[in-house]
Length: 136
Image (cartoon, rainbow, N blue to C red; front, side, top):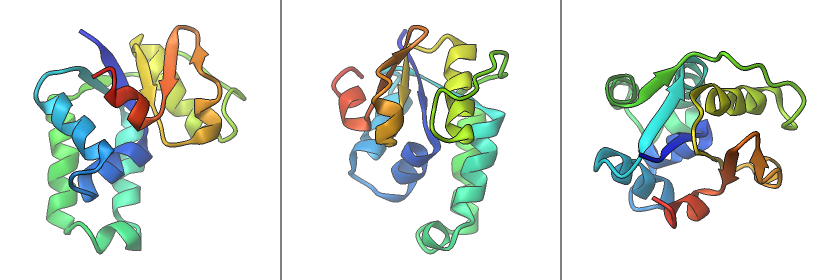
């Protein structure tokens, strides 16, 4: 089965904007169309994002906790076993890429245009949410 790491920005958008492409990707994952892979770093970062004012106005604290619990329960959690430094323009993006490499995921899905420009890194295809929607 195809596996994908969804960047924190894609996950956060999917949980807060119904009907958008990130939401469609989450629904396809829940329908078993692909295996969603997360790392503890991604879960922690998503929890922090949910606490930001923009997201806390769109999600109750309980709903945010439920979304994180859903990911912990249904997604595949991978330990980061591969180090990545200086590939992405931001260190936190290197950690997301490291999660994809550690899990040997097929895809890394991100809204970050600079990370998308890399295209492929050590076998992981880096796509926009719209690009991945075509494959899932």
